[in-house]
Length: 180
Image (cartoon, rainbow, N blue to C red; front, side, top):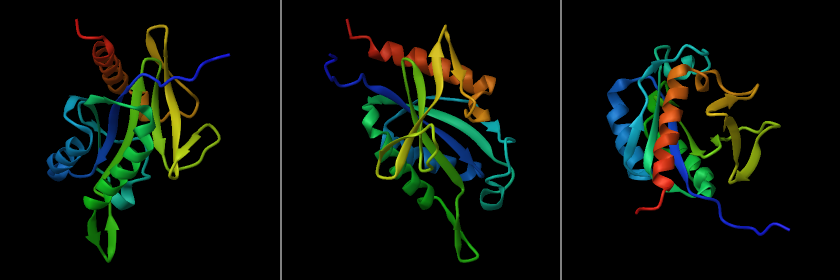
């Protein structure tokens, strides 16, 4: 019989989709206030995956990933998702009596063996966490690399994204080592 125990802490990151570089510094400040100092970032990559966000956010979008220095408990993923949704709302602009997002912030975490994302949307492969938030394992790490599933988002398969996650994993592993 197994004995329940708390999991190792995980490395939090966000996938940020932005329509405007103008408020990126403000969004970064809000994210660091929420999650701690940023310790790595991907290059900004043009978003050409889908037009899903075009009506609300515009057509010239940029995807960037940030990871944060403090390690967290995996159970914090749902509360973090709710707080990042509030940040999206804070950075929205009023247009034609309707708020439109200027930024989409999707939090997740990395542990030794996987990348897990938070979502408000139910799908058969997602597990309910709490407060209306689901968790999705989107990449598995084995044989020295990250591997996708059929449902993995295309931007998580970009070479720059996989390189970012590989570097973030290496950083995470050094953080897990006890100080000598």
